[in-house]
Length: 418
Image 1: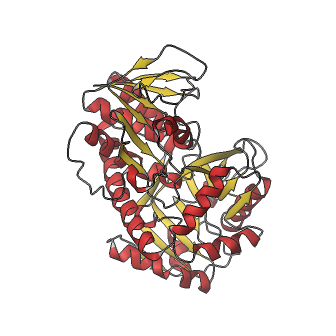
Image 2: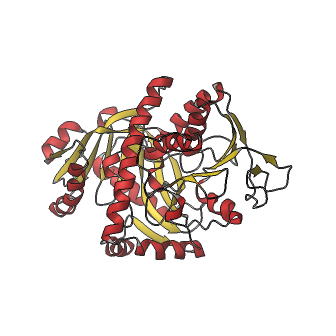
Image 3: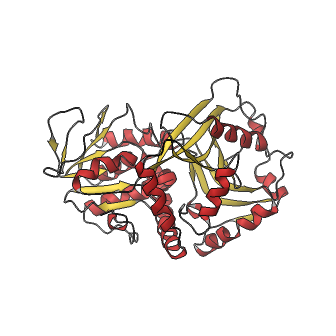
């Protein structure tokens, strides 16, 4: 089939490669000038399937309220808020019920473990070499943090995730650069999880896709799809429409706008995250792999010769306005755990990206309800961890093949607003 993909983030690139492997003629349309320039550009890079869980969970409303009142809280609300943000919050609250949360957590983790396996298969098959390292550790500053994480450990046990509960000395044996000046009550170490440079992977896989005949078209701001000709692509500024056998929507938050003429009301909202990336000054003072500060929900990752610090979750505000308070939290957590590890005087990359979030957590994969229009969107902060599995599932569904993973609850019917 002749297939168009809208969006060239990590979701679009992996989907293009999988479809090309299946023998389809694939064209990718992206409004930016290269692949992985938005949500996939400078994320934390963590691939930890056992720790993937929905935002919408019992008790989260109280946690969010406390975070809003905290100087370094992980969750913030910024003005202006759009109508979609209010709609998102309303649906999010309804999804915090225990039964809903348990179902959605299972869906996300099932897809995440499948995706990690597929990531390794793709990396090996294409012999991709990108910045990555093994292991992931969750740092617990206090006994209260240790108590709060216990329900999460029950989840890890239930899904068979390999992990170790460590005391402070054992944690520092694995990450010897951890500062002794910052209180550490213990840690959770997940040796089978990993960290990798999402954008590097996307760039490398783009080359592999091009070798299979995939065509990438950049600087293309695509117009909303037409109800009359839903499998046709045209530019927002006006151009001749080009028809395809199928269209796969992988355009993140903008997917909702482009799908609206088809009668789809998908409650996507941008939840912004921040990161800083800096060159390592002293390798012995830097992390070996990736750690996450459980209290502040900030990840610190080693990516080659740099350290990346990523965190914050902001609803509302503007895409192009970096929040200084969020950056101060990132610098604080970096200094708490790895003082002197990086050069901060020059060359620090600051980034803000919009995570395309759905209120209840899992992404939407599969048919849109309009013949020939397919969806692979709404991965939120787990896009990198879910990308390879989501792409393989989408390609299998388009090809009429058995995806090899349970897709219950991942279809569009779960979240449509009528």
